[in-house]
Length: 70
Image (cartoon, rainbow, N blue to C red):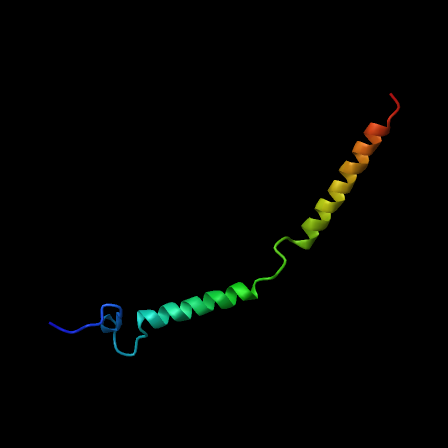
């Protein structure tokens, strides 16, 4: 029977291959870097502007409707 560290899977890897812990750490750091690189703006500015214009038109039309003489 071998004395193997149960928390380490290094004995399952081939020579010159990174351990699973190293691969996980690299993947984690890569994911964090990608999340930091994502733009702050989640909504397309053109769509935001179009929505603003639509809201303004709706408000104007509702105002005209309510201001009609009965």
